[in-house]
Image (cartoon, rainbow, N blue to C red; front, side, top):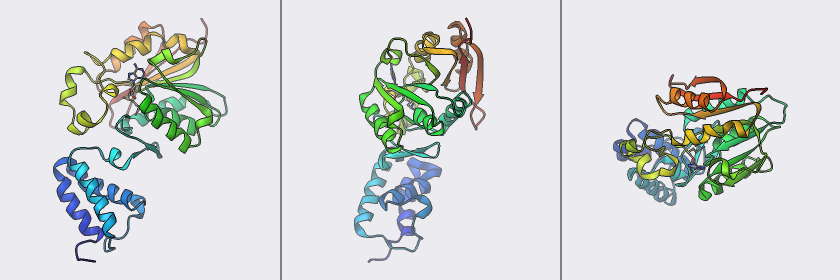
Length: 288
Ligand SMILES: C[S@@+](CC[C@H](N)C(=O)[O-])C[C@H]1O[C@@H](n2cnc3c(N)ncnc32)[C@H](O)[C@@H]1O
């Protein structure tokens, strides 16, 4: 085996190549991709002096080239960790973001442990929000809706992998249109597209050129999907039920207003770990 084919030298070369696209995360990205190629976890990545077989070196170098071309690491390795669970992803699903864990936290507060509850996730994508909630609440069941059949195929694989298929239904459709007459939910969650159309070009190239625009573009003011979701929320919520949605930076007041205009009450806003107002929640009155 020639010199220079150890874990350490491979990582160093990759870090160098990735510095212009991954910046401070170049080393981390290289480690994640090498762990993927070696079919191991980051924590179990072999010690730096260990030599890597040529086949794996070729595979790793292909991953590095894809990353150099701007493809997100999650698409290259085909998965992303979210809520300490592993979710399959591909170019049809948004890559689950850590910010979105705030929505899971808020949602959980409204799902009483031990009580059979029904959850609706609008724009489920990879299924990360719905499936994380179902994973935490063994008595809950739910419906994930998306207009992308390709995203739903991934959500189904994730539900299967997490052993949650029996407690979730995945339906294709335009927001509430996928629901049946009379269906109501204790909790509605959504992380809809919320980027203003005019800001789409200013997104980081990784996002703009690789993630599905249908998962990102929220219309002229970024609020189109919230209008749709808020307007019919009361109809599909059980009495006393909660809706909680993720919002983009600076959108929380507008979305809170939309909930109030739709007749919902007890509107609350919740910050993510960076202190950004990230989730807006509201309730349907317990009695009418
Ligand atoms: C921002 S992504 C969120 C994906 C996933 N829930 C997450 O948090 O990672 C928004 C999702 O909404 C879906 N979507 C967009 N418009 C929709 C519509 N009219 N009806 C249903 N789903 C829609 C997109 O396909 C995409 O999967």
